Picture 1 (cartoon, helix red, strand yellow):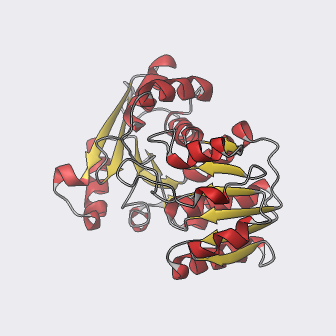
Picture 2: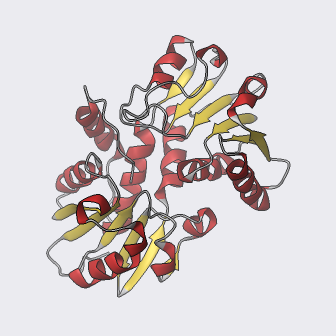
Amino acid sequence: MADIDGTGWLIGLLGAGIGPSLSPALHEREAEALGLRYAYRRLDLDTLGRPASDVGAILGAVRLTGFDGLNVTHPCKQSVIEHLDDLSDDAAALGAVNTVVLTGGRAVGHNTDQSGFASSMARGLPDAALDRVVLLGAGGAGAAVAHALLKLGVGRLDVVDIDPARADALARSLAERSGTDRVRVGGRPEALPALLGDADGLVHATPTGMAAHPGLPIPAELLDPRLWVADVVYRPLQTALVRAAREAGCRVLDGGGMAVFQAADSLRLFTGAEPDAERMLRHLAELTKGSSSDADAA
């Protein structure tokens, strides 16, 4: 894939409150290592003073300016879809886009959150038991993780959310693709003690644990050492859940892998080059060392 003007790639991150995001540093450093001229710019709705409803106008301006692609984060992952020319199968299934490739006059949406989590699981917990898994969080990140888990072969997935209607909607969508025998509405977090009693693993996909939302998403006493625990939060890498799960003797997967692999997949889509995910993981570790601030993964 060639960039538009033949001199390099211009990529943006569109979302609200994205000042702390590590996506620019992750992308630009890896592109430099690959020998690519690559500029990554934040398009922060808060800084621009624009509402999320202006996503179509912003995308139009970006296309006219000559951007080669966008990463898209909260609150635009769904609203951007109606302004695109096409969607990948994964983005269509999820109803969410976090990567837009702009080439040949077309804007094509992709979702690398799903592939990012799947790659992180394969690397960090390659032999994890998948007969029964509990997913806490049915928002955008939870939907991507849920699809990834089912593709990885989870036998039954229990979807839990503070909003029962949201848990039900995600479970119904998943069941349409994977079968009603593989997906169940777990209800509200109050159901976690019963659900985790015979589960193999827990995946956490809510904001709890970020610097702006500190704390544990579940009572520490529910962290039995026979469970594996995966967190999607990556700033900080050592969330309260990650620390508590390790102290309880659980096998643990922090959110760094998902953040890096989704970024690597996006960079590949933008440029056609092959990123070195292990190198990007080392860079993420450097960027997050000693940091407790939070940001969305793009």
